[in-house]
Image (tube, rainbow, N blue to C red):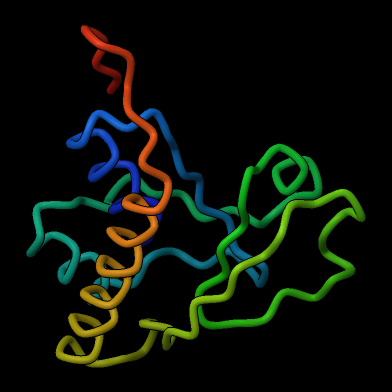
Length: 128
């Protein structure tokens, strides 16, 4: 959810930033309820392929944001960037109403992060 919102909202705001999504536990497919909740906002996760966080991905990140779980320090290389935790519930196995609330909380946090970053895209250039 977070990466999808981040990339869409950054693109809409012409911000030159990009998010990638990776998990710290087993990579499970996105639940049908989460797919539905995100589709209600116009964001499709149908093609999302879950993957695990790798040391290379952690090293190449500017920031790592973890949703709803702690990251075992052993998963991150010593030179990894700071980790920010967003204490949000896991939507998997939750009813639609709860997933909607989680989705909305994720979007609010993403919007705040984009305001904090405030990285404009060069004039005349649109990515996508």
